[in-house]
Structure formats: structure tokens, C-alpha cells
Length: 181
Image 1 (tube, helix red, strand yellow):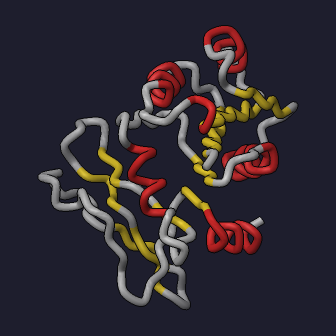
Image 2 (cartoon, one colour; image 1 turned 60 degrees about the vertical axis):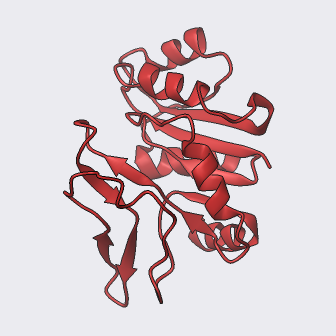
Image 3 (tube, rainbow, N blue to C red; image 1 turned 135 degrees about the vertical axis):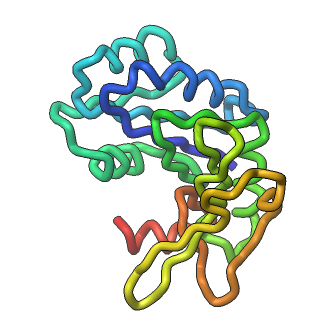
């Protein structure tokens, strides 16, 4: 299965090398991976950095800043993968990160999956997934502010609440994206 990773970019030249270098160290074969960077009219040379140092990244340039959502939507339209991942430009992933996301999405009942995210101190959990409380759409995060001791290192589902995060795949994921786009 092919995976498309979409990175909306705006003045990200300080963050992009760490992000992209970590993606290029993934365990995934390069033929099964598509990285798309959508530059939102950056003024710090981000597009030049991407074009010059990362020829394996497909660069899409917006004439004006379309915002985070606009950059994501433009990247999703350009993507050809079976799995679609939205990734912030300041994210650094581990080599097995994609393996874990893809394993979660192999379950045909799962359409959307997320991962544990640490704050820059690499010890404190920003969140390890989450859920929306309906009908108010209040967002809740698992593990927020906890010291990472491995307590969120396995796949979990919250009973009665579908997961909401940034990777989609399979038939269920296609239905989720069709409703969102």
C-alpha cells in the first residue's frame, strides 16, 4: 500500500530539515511513500530549501497563503496514496512511526488513526490520541501532560467513540475523507 504524507508549509525553513530527514529515515520502502510539501507562499526560502535539498519531495506551491486547512486540502487533492497522513512541518518522527500507523489502519473497521505526540522535551506527552464528545464536539486528549513511561505505547480504542486524528486509509478512511472534503 502506498502512503502519502502531506506537509502544509509556511515559513518553515527552520523546522523542515529535521522533519524531512526523519521521514527519509522511515522503515518504509521509498516506492511505497509519497511526501508532498504544500508551500503557502512562504517568505523565508522554504520552497527553495525543499526544491534544492529534497528532490524526492513533491513540492506544491500556492500563490498565496491558503492557511493550514487550505494547504492540507491542496495536498490531499494531489495525493495518490492509499493511506493519507497530514503532518505538521515541525514534527520529527521515529523510524517505526509509519509502521505503527499502517498496522492500525489495516483493520477494515478503522478509518482514522493517530499516534502519541511528545512535547519538545521528549518526555512529556502532548497527546496520545483523542476523542470528540458529541454533540458539542468537545475535544479530549489521552495522556495530556503525563510523563511518558510507555503507558500509551499500544493501539487503543475508546469504546463508543471513533478515533479522530490525522491518518486515513482503507474503505472506512475513504468514507471519512469524502465526508470531510
